[in-house]
Length: 400
Image (cartoon, rainbow, N blue to C red; front, side):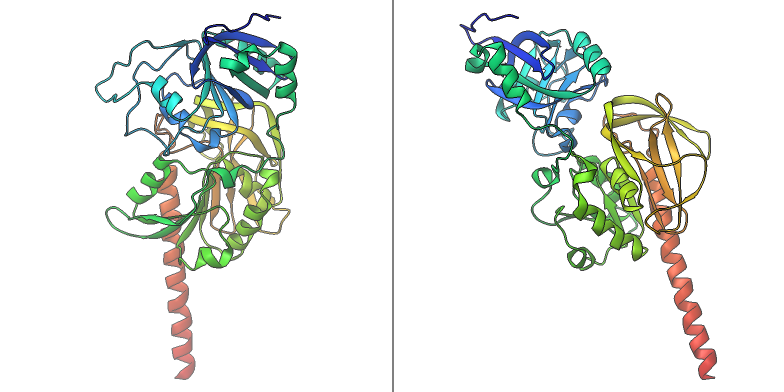
């Protein structure tokens, strides 16, 4: 193992919990960072990845070799800051070259205190994680690069893993805020912010919803004080088994038959609310090139992913939900490994997908899921109006 002292502040090392080490050079902020080491296969969209709150608690390894070429701008961020716990790349660009760029990736990493490493063999890291699974890791640079390998490994092995962690509170909004509907208004949607991306809010506002974004700690009374036409659960980090509050809240929403749509973490929480289990994937799905098939239409979409957990639900057609919410069925699966990628309830207005249809960096194959959500809400509104008319008619007839 290398033990050379870092005398000029440029050396850095990525240490995995099984003892594997990758030596490179310091990048971004200096110091130490701990998180679950994961790899993402996107060739573009590093700014969206870095600012996606669902990457909180993870050290992200980019499989694309050249990162930072197009710099950073103020139009593409998914949130107000970089959320990754640490960042690793093979060859950061020496210059930022794009007409929309206003600053470099390096400067944003340093500004937000993201300890990063460059110059490592990211292909070797990816192959190792693919074979051994995502694991705890640490990046050490600056003074922390002078620690012995034994000291660094002990720190990594003493850091928290992802299983059992509830990270929503750390990434959620503190206060309610609203984005007004664009075009013809059809109603309002309350988004429970578990790590929301800006693109999701834009997609829903574009389809005629007043979007109310609420803290993850919201109570059922606070939620319905907004009089939402629908409820939405966002993407976010953490283990769905550690989110009992969100599961209990969602069961109340489903009981009231309020239309519901969930993506990514929201898909896992719908699965648990319906009574299905969830489990941790060996190395997860991260990137913008995952093939997913809609089992009902046979249509295949190339989709954006970021998840390390998945829903354990039976395939092959409708089943009764263990929690008593009528029938549900698996609607989408990943063609690479058959992981559940979508669930639909058949007796209440609720569905979810595991991937990211908002996909700001692309692809946009799943964008029509927001149209499906809009149609579901309109159908429920129409059905409720027809039911009210029927009751009023029956009451009038009876009075006569």
